[in-house]
Image (cartoon, rainbow, N blue to C red; front, side, top):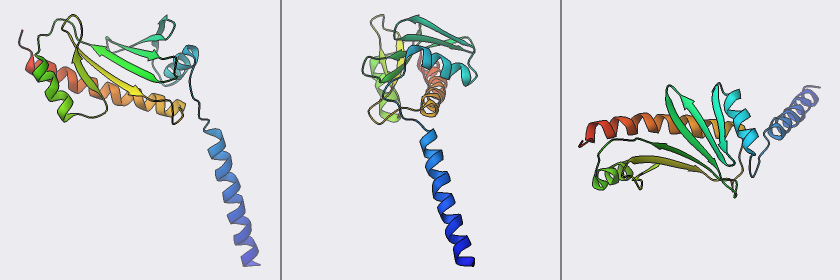
Length: 151
């Protein structure tokens, strides 16, 4: 009798875990409207479609851009205007940090970007985690730029 109960519990556990996995739907791309919903559902109230494929998210007075590419990949962008920093210093950031890359844009302003590739599948949770990690990177990047500002 105990063996039957254990077997029944094991089968029920397998069924339950397969249902839990089925609820985590992988997508190969999100629509702009879906990305806006995901960010708002995660508690960000200032989320706006700037134009197709370009979403602005404001947090604590800072604007982040979320690009929804035609391939389904997502890219986050944050720029700092008015800072003077050398490309050599920006390269220090890139040598020491992961999950993002920094460069000087065409106006010679420091920029931080990160990518979330869609080829492994996207979920609401990894989109919100991607943004959360990027916000942390931006805080560190702002400190780095402030410390190394030559202006």
